[in-house]
Image (cartoon, rainbow, N blue to C red; front, side):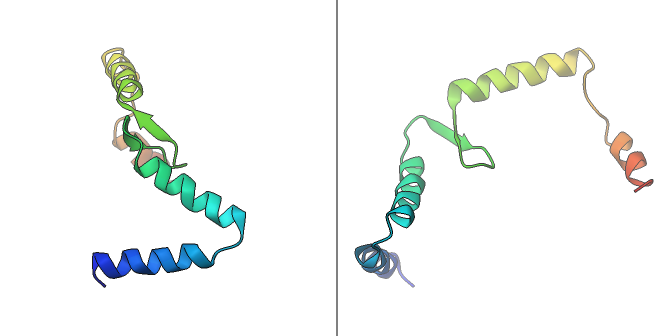
Length: 82
């Protein structure tokens, strides 16, 4: 299906929806997609800004330097007991 066909299909679907909860869900999804300051998204769908991502990176680097990390061997060994 071409992009033009997909757009036409979406317009048709949206025009026939009367359930406001479905329309709100579609609106939220599209609003998140067009958010200008978002550089990524949480698994929950919440947008992540560049500033928040840089803060996370700084924290992760600090934790790594402080030795606060788990090696790959640790969860592998732990999983043997599952």
